Length: 379
Image 1 (cartoon, rainbow, N blue to C red):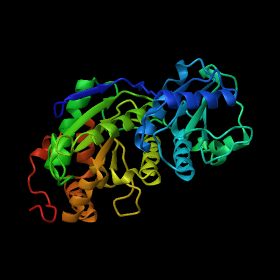
Image 2 (image 1 turned 135 degrees about the vertical axis):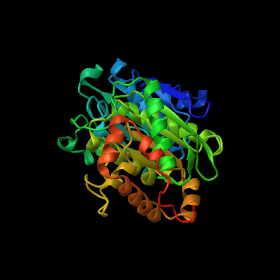
Image 3 (image 1 turned 180 degrees about the vertical axis):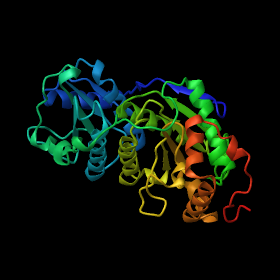
Image 4 (image 1 turned 120 degrees about the vertical axis):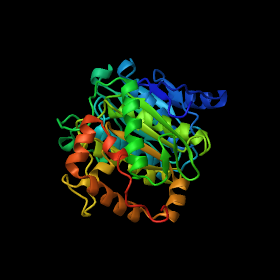
């Protein structure tokens, strides 16, 4: 793709999965032995958790159109032990807290060759059983005692709010072209000219070494669909070198735009995945939202701090960063120093002026100022 080009994706991407004949035979035999002859099986080619999650969310997102009360997703190329697969399942449980499909009309049970379910032979490879009911067309699913892992740490839905009213940010009905233009203007002004990220030279170049920046726009309204697009972008980033694509700014104008708390909860599930599933060696994340508020206990925390505008973007965004590039940057400028300089520069503009700029998407005042406090080593 051309750097900075408009990358628009359908909210739901259906990913093709396939299997070798020997794998198909083994799975067919297991499905027959467990009396699941009517259960369709999708076989993922994933050999890591990131790709496995992409394929999992693809299956979740087709649930409303599926006539089957139960489906299976098999991972013959995923060479992980039962404990690691259990962590994968734990992450899925956590994600259900913010989803509209998963945990509402779709429930998941795991199977692993090292695990033993009474009355079942060992499964030939790691597998997830997706059980639908209600609006998805199936009757209420029946679970074995061993399937209770999905419910062990069942989330408290009473604390979840993905649609609360709020203010700030740009209009959610903006066209893709307007979203792209507005996002790029904000990046040029706040991230580059104001030097919120000292390693972003333009809206099209960032990182160490410098590489391309892409701006995919995801029109999804549910967390299920945003998860799918997120993991798709992880794969795209992993498929090219850092000079071709250094970083991704995934813009979600229709998701949680009026609910900063809901977006925070969604962000927490992705941050958990980095450490829980070992993805942090590949990826680091930074989240932006029109009403972002630091909650780290520092002086910048709280809604009144001008420093919050270092993370307040016209629309909700997920910034995917390459871990090796982040580590290289931290050797030159410690993260704490970056925060301190950003706080000083934001305070110099002032909260009220920054709020007007964000509301009007007019960053001319930032471009007119050139006496910013410089980051150490960047004078």
